[in-house]
Amino acid sequence: MKNYPNSIKKLIREYHGKAYEKELHRELAKLDQSFAEWRDGEIDSWELSDRIHQYEVGPSRELYKQYTPKVADMNLAYAIVAGILDRDEIPTELLEALDGALRFYQGMKDSGDLRLPE
Image (tube, one colour):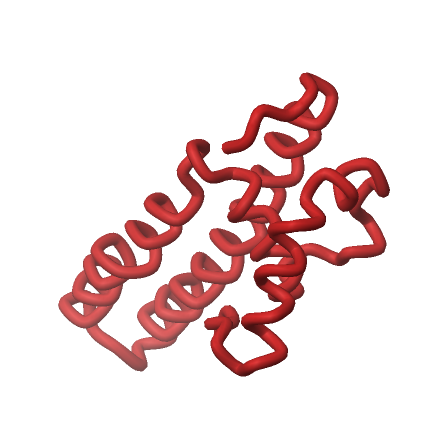
């Protein structure tokens, strides 16, 4: 992460956490659907256990690795461009501090090279 003023670092940590929580919530909602299927008798306990395992070794692990604090500014810029966070809710001073990273990800998005969340 670049050397930002402390006020910007604080905002980066705050919004980085919000982006992580939103993505984690999305993936947990998918897992919750598996629990609903299990409660309704649509899948058995073995299938549910397998889905929990797949969540742990897949989405959970990937999000944990993605949202490392070392590159919080880049992760945050990605989250803004990818639509995980609403750009209108991000403070102007934070958008200005992330301008280069935002332009980088916007260029990737415009060229179709940015992987967007499912």
